[in-house]
Image (cartoon, rainbow, N blue to C red; front, side):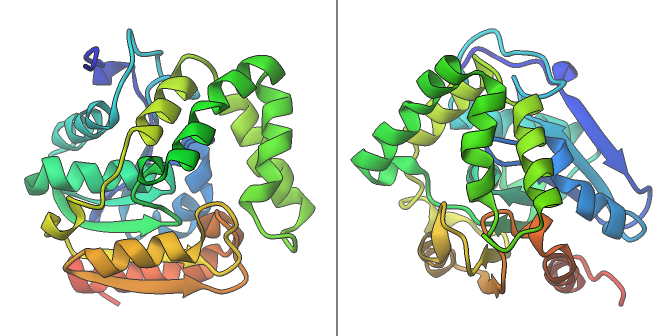
Length: 265
């Protein structure tokens, strides 16, 4: 059961005034800062907005636990407040939220871009158990040490040191309890496999070929189950392909929107 979250408590970064609207949903260890490369390169073509999820970054803490429906419904309220519908880009956990959003609120989702994501950790008991231990790990280590342990795995071994620092710093400033714990529990309880075939939104599924977190196999599962999907591998990129290879990632985003939103060349 969700404790309702007031969307007024969300911190939302925005850029661009014209063009298709793209809502960006970050991963479980991040914030709106994860989309800085997209804001820099796509802001002249798109109207972009990215949240700090409830209980993350500069957003207010939720009054109680949120399940996946709670996150999806909060994202739906955000789209409605901006005139909806919107195209939705979700990275990792953000992709899981985006898929549930499209299933629950199909009228608000023009299309999906799902990057380095999965059907949820509830597909496997071991994965679910590991996800549930993360809140305990965060409580024991604190945000900085937690980020230094986890951040480097989110990019490839060849990633520049500056990118590793940026990813780690973003995590250290974004995550805290109870928000991170609610997100981890939501992921552990989620298995989207049964609802994927019913999602009608045209979907671009991307994954870095060097992703060692969710991995290409999970993205292939999504693409194979979604009825209107295209699947793309981003070469020489780890889990955060949008940050490690933004030029290639953004080119695929624009290609997708040229088809789904009739975006001009």
